[in-house]
Length: 141
Image 1 (cartoon, one colour):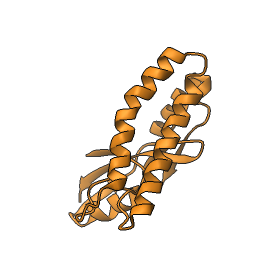
Image 2 (cartoon, one colour):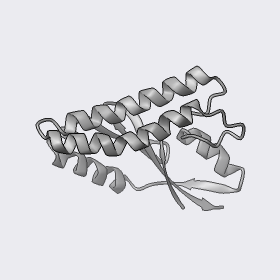
Image 3 (cartoon, helix red, strand yellow):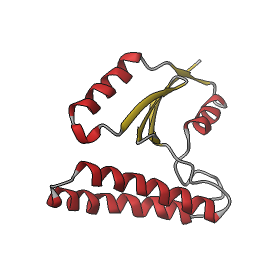
């Protein structure tokens, strides 16, 4: 099983922490669009309008008080602990996957702030060093 998740923790029991994390994450997404759509205002506007729906969900996750802790994004370490409880083991993503992600990022000049790195066996995709997505692979042991 492959899991791709927003790399953030919006499940703190403290509202201010959830809200700040959600707002920071949304800011990273808007920064990415702003950098990549310079000079193309129509596309930038469309991207921001499209993203606004996602951002509103992100901010609402930050505002929600979800007792079961499953309402928002979780960092990869939380997923690791969760899947291990069910007898699943993380499998190594190939170095080729990281190489391919780096090649894609190099193809578009505005994507140069896109960062890709391995966190253990997981692939993390970020923007200017801030983790945005984690990709992990799992199997039953």
